[in-house]
Image (cartoon, rainbow, N blue to C red; front, side):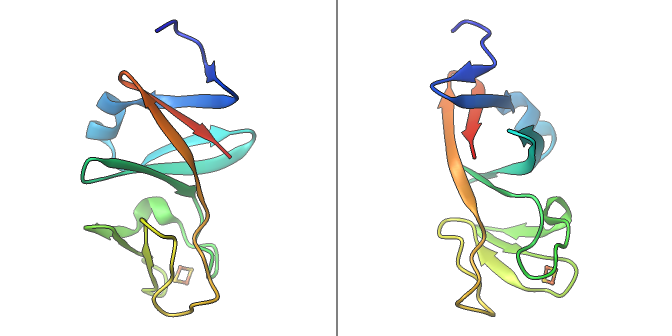
Length: 107
Ligand code: FES
C-alpha cells in the first residue's frame, strides 16, 4: 500500500504495532480526537470523551468489550455503543478500516 494518509475519505491514524504499545490509540481525525480500541480481533473507533460528562475514555478500564469510565463508573459496550446505566446514552462509534497494518478512520 502507498503511504497515503487517506483511503477513500478515511484518515490514517496509526498501525497495529502502535495499538500493541497503547490500547487505545488516540488520534485526531477531521479535527476530532478519537480513540481506536482493539477488542479481541476487532478494531473499534469511538469518541475520546465519555458521553456522560466528558470523562477521558483513554483512561477507562477495558474488560472484554465493556469500557468503564473512571469518572463515575458508567459502562459502555464497544460493540454497540450502548450504555448500561442510561439506555438513552450512546457512545459514538466511527468507521474503522484495516489496510495491511495501517488503521484508517472516518468520523
Ligand atoms: S464522565 Fe464518564 S461516567 Fe461520568
